[in-house]
Structure formats: structure tokens, C-alpha cells
Length: 459
Image (cartoon, rainbow, N blue to C red; front, top):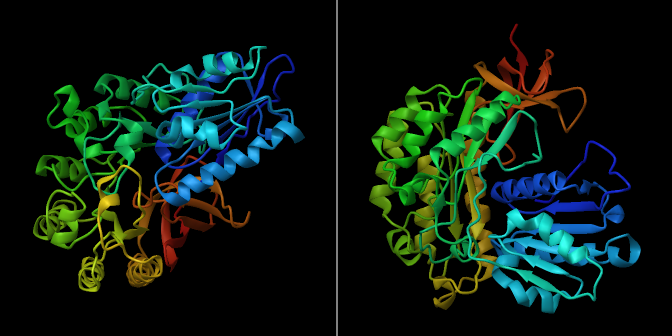
């Protein structure tokens, strides 16, 4: 998803103007926010109109084929501004840049610079270097990832003022056969607890009600620092931060989830009763072929354990269909499990070959049309489950974090309860009562429409 910066002030004529486009996930968004903060601190001005920008930076995504194509299309589209706008320098940064490096420069001659995932902190220096009057020469800035920002790093946040992403680690030590993230982000490196707590404290002082903890492998946080259990240690410190209302960890790998961690979820009001845990498959052979730890027995036991220890939990997961060799019988096992488990949210991804990953060399590729059919089957089942869960909430009263006026109509407010994560889940439409963005109000649910709810503020 593309995010274009909307700058609050007109750029000064004396400053070089920067146009910035963010693509991809929330982890990319944090990288973009750090780069934007660095550029502003260094004296650059920002514009939301790329036609007026002298430097255009595209923070790319390289996760799956569709994301890579979107990144390339965006680079090509903004490259045309060298003729139709004021663009002098075009930069590709991020995952696609790290992964394809010099190939990008060769295939996209409109690019002036390629900046990898280990060089975000140098973005202002890179811009000045490329703007210097000299013969045009394409340049690479690539170093060993990962890059980790600290609590003092300048940051210009995108999105809502009351909700923020906090990256607690970068990189991944897993070896999932389908995933190229370690190639783009490197081995896992965790930020110190003190740095994360300092950032959370500052964000809370700025009015942030909700922090969303992100990394490639959140449950493995702190292992490289010698912290065991690292995530539990971090959360015990974060719940002490004054004025934070919700702390939402994302992406728990389905191993190393201790009872101590689950009890902390259940017992601490600030930690949302929300589990984000991509399971990827349920069939034993598929899991082994994917290089995933565990099997069906361990996964079903874990899901039961989570639901027992956190009775009110909202459970979000993700599966891959069409992994090489997936038979109709193995898919049927997955489909039946989704029906039986009744997760609150399910994302379904189509397998795609990613260069230099172990899965590329596997035989028995599944046709795209078959993958589409399988995804649609699971999503249809999940829609019925989600609709029933929504209906069951009618009549309940819950805390809702108000996001502001609804994007659908100015006649409604919209917000989220703790079981709705920003951007990826539904919303609560508020059709009666007044509140400001960032305020937490009691809402009685009066109607449900699949993933969205409708209600009114309780006096």
C-alpha cells in the first residue's frame, strides 16, 4: 500500500524539496518515518506534490511478486517527472533496492541512486551527494543489513497522531523455504529494552494512545541480546509507561510462546488481547516442506493453550495456499482446519517463487488458477465465521479508540476496539455521540457487517 506524505507546511524556496512515497508494510513505514525525520532535521523541505520535488525517494517493497511489480511501476511513473516536473534526483530505497541493487540501476536508467536497508541513516548525506553539480553517475549505497534506529533518531510519523508503530528488532533468523526477508533484512538484531521504552515514553508524552510493536519475528525478540524471555521482559517494562492505553505486539512465530508470556497478555490491561500469529499451513508434510518448525499437533495445542489462558483473545493468522507439492487432500485439511478453528481474522497468500529461496527449486508447482480457487474457498469460509462473530458482539459495550471522522461519510465517526488492529482489520462506525480523534469512549454495538461494527457512544 502506497503512503504519500502530506506535509503540514509549505516548503521553503531556499530548501531542496523532497517528495517521498512509502510502499509495503508497517516496518517499511517506520523506515520511511526515520528517513523523513532525518531529511527535515538536515534542512530539506517536504512536499506532497511529486511534480514540485527536486528529489523523489521511493521506499520499495520486495516481499512478493505483486509488491515488487508495484515498486517498479512506481519508480517508472515518478521517473517521468524528470521531464514533466522539477525532479533532478530519483532514488529507490528499501527491500527491492537491497535485493536487486545494481540490476535496478541497469533496468531502470531513470534511477540515480539505490539505497539498501542498511543505509537509511545516511539518506540526507546521500541526497546531498547526488545533488552536487557534477556529471550524472548512478550510485549504489549498499551495506550489510540490518539498520536499527535508536530512541533519539529524528522521526516524522505518518498516519494517525494517536497510534504509532515501534520497531523492536530487524531481520530474521528463520529459514522458511518461501521467504526472502533474511536476504533483504539480514539476521535478527534487537534494539535494547531501554531504547524501546524511551521511545514509547516519548510517544506517550506526544499523545500516542496505542503502540504497535513490529519486527520480522517478534516472539524471538532479544535472543541476540542474551534476553530470555526477551519479549516478556520488554513488555513488563512497557506496561509501566504512563499514559499508554494499548500495547499491541505483531507477528508471534508459533514456537517459543511461553505460558509466562500468555499470562502477561491476560493479566496486563495495557497489552491488547490480540494475537497475530501466521501459521502458514496445518498439514505436517507441507509444514516440513516449508521449513516451518512444529506440526499440526503442536499448532492445535498452542491455539488451544492461547485461548484457554486468554479467554477473550482475538486471533489473527495467515496461511499460504499453492505451496509446491500441495495436494488437493492437503489443501482440504487446511480448509477444514480453518472451518473448525474459527479464527477471528485470516489472511490467505498465494505462493510465489522468490529468487534464491529454498522453495524455488521444489518441483510440483501449483497452477495459479488452482491457487486462486483455493484462496477463494478459504476466504468464503472465513467470511461466514467473521459474520457470525460480528453478530455475537451486538449488545456488548466496549472501549473504542476514536480514529476521527469516517472515511466513508462525514456523518459517522470511526474507531477500533482492541481486537481491531490498525489498517489490516475492520473498524467500528459510531453513528451517535461526539468524540475527538485519540479519545477512548464506551461504545454499545448495535449492528455488524462482516468485519465492521456499528454502535453508539454510551454516556
